[in-house]
Amino acid sequence: MLLLTFPVVMGIGLAMQTAVNAKLRGFIGSPYLSSGFSFLIAWLFLLILSGVTHQPLLISGAVMTHGPGWLWLGGLFGAIALTGNVVLFQKIGSLQTTVLPIMGQIIMSVVIDQFGLFHSPTNALTLSKIIGLLLIVGGVVLSLGIFAPRDPLLKAATSKPERSSQLFYQLFAVLAGMLMAMQTAINGYLGTVLQSPLHAAFISFSIGVLCLILVNLVTRARLANLKLAFQQGPRYWWIWFGGVIGALYVLCSSWLVPLIGTGQVVVLALFGQLVFSALVEHFGLFGSQVARLSRAKIIGLIIMFMGVLIVKLLTF
Image 1 (spheres, rainbow, N blue to C red):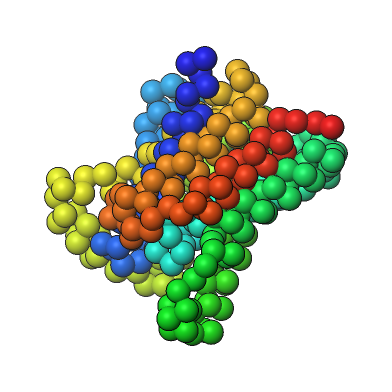
Image 2 (image 1 turned 90 degrees about the horizontal axis):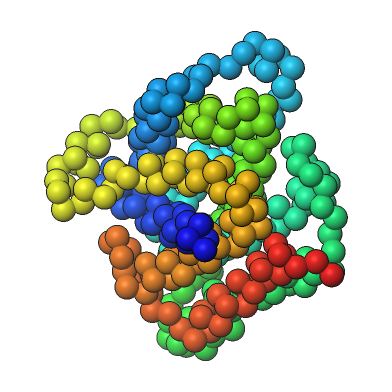
């Protein structure tokens, strides 16, 4: 029973990581630099952990030459998703930054299962999964407040470019969730090839760090802006722990899946992520903007979670 609390805490950690990285971006000014620094902290954490547990750090030539090309895309997809979440948190809020990627993650995981992509076990689409997906989409629609009554003055003040910009960020949030699902499948196979989840996580984060270093060089990010974040002192000590949270999530997933199964890990983690992201937005935690929970949002989150349960745990 105690093991079942770990995935919930992991989900809370994911929601917290997004808020923490967004606050770091607020001080640094660049989503690429904040994501790169977060990845670097996670990489250093995994490097120390690998050294303590005597894990290898390099990859054999046979794996490099005979492995499929997509085997190294997990770090890239993770970097894109993390950077996207930092931007999305400030553009569409904590709740949408959690809900929409979850929808993309579930949809892509069903596609991966259906066709056995990335050497994953084939798990055909069933009626229960179709019903679950419909519930997830319906829950997302309700949680976004699309059918909620709006203030006509507020509606009139919202220009078409602003609404189209919101739609762009919402679609990107779904895409980010799809990339996260692909990253999970790729890293799972990489862990099998390397015979070590920790080694796979280290390699994945190494690739992510390299990608973000290149992005920061191309965009000419100002490293001097990191000084602004350091100057915040003890008051904002928590802005430096986003990377560690992400690294712990990857490691805990690798540890828990063999013990309690993928379905329970995913469902319980999503539950923790949904609930805590709603609380972050409702109370304005971690310096986020306050957006009170409405009845429609609460009902939407419940329906969405029911859909996740059906997709992951039921078969008929």
